[in-house]
Image 1: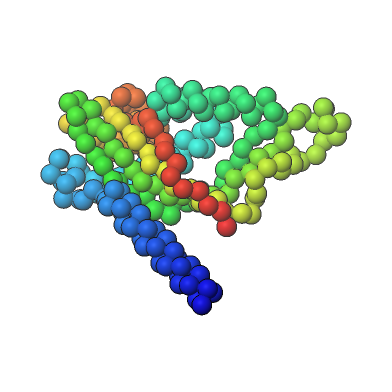
Image 2: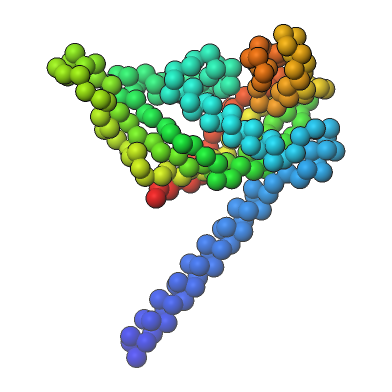
Length: 225
């Protein structure tokens, strides 16, 4: 009889746990509900939620690549002061340890525009982004200090294990009446949703304030497989 009661209690706890998990997922889905294309149209946007969300994924991937390449100019143009400084500190700390983080094969699992608001002269967007990629750390100790010339060895992470992460990205930009700009250099029309350079010739077409800049990144989930 005692074992029977214990079994019933365990079963009830499992059911309760599953119910709470389902409630949590349902609440998250509501909290992160996508902005509709009709809403974007109503506020005068000429892009869809899918186009915007994928553009933000590309922006995020470019930021991570710029960190890896130490492309400070791109980082300065794409990040708020706070995030820019945090990446600079991370790069410095890695160099002090003779290490470098390598990120490869980043792909989107999903990218969803969950908020786009216009306040005064500013636009504020939030994107729920889930990506997977390979991440590992290599030893960057100079060959002369090692006494032999060898390929950089992996000292952390994995070249084969797929890392999966979710973020809520917050981005801001100054509101503009026209989001498509004719490049003065080549005449090509570029949408400045995420970039301030011409997609054809690379010439600067708008200032930093008129394209999206990442001001916050909240990590919501991490897994590997």
